[in-house]
Length: 267
Image (cartoon, rainbow, N blue to C red; front, side, top):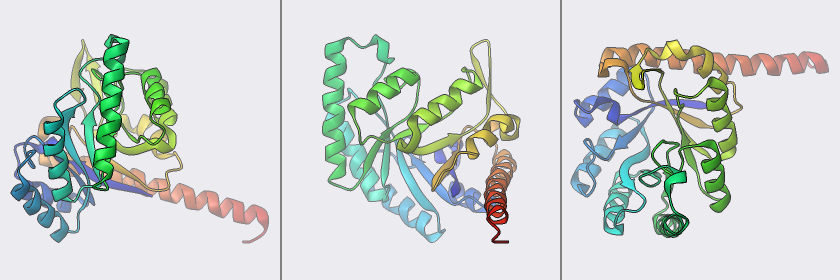
């Protein structure tokens, strides 16, 4: 089962209430609330209000999208964690450091990992998982660095989002390497031109995304992000595409089930 949702930072110019309403209009079921605009770290009153607003609309809160980076002071982490707990988010997204894995000296990386484990243990006391993004400029910048991190932290879960500066086969390899450690997916389509990121209609990435959704996910969230021109009407367009892909995925699964039944003589 794949559940469609939205990363709230896609619409920084909208209020939290407007984001909830937009999700309702788009037929989305979940929201990852961002920590920069909609639910600022440390603003527990806001976190309670956004939590209530989400529940009233029947929206699942998948995560608190913090902007905490490993290596920052732990006071900043606790402020973000308290906000995530107040919001009722089961997951807090973080960034795994401030530079690529290969740029960390061994002793600095070791200290970073010690902090990472400590913070994960701290969050677990509030039943919150810490999950980093698969992201350039952090120690999850490459397939090999992610594999190393998963080996070092066997219980760690990770986000995946496509690196549109990579070949399609490499993007999909990254997803498969994460495997059952996948926390959530961020869904968007880009084109990279002269190093610049150009946001496209989601449908322009259909070739890759259909391969993504062909994976046998038992339960996964597809969280939409980076809508072209930051326009609500483009979210409505892209959400319809995403829901169609999810629906076709279900139909394909039923067709396979039917084939197996026919082959075994059940039908």
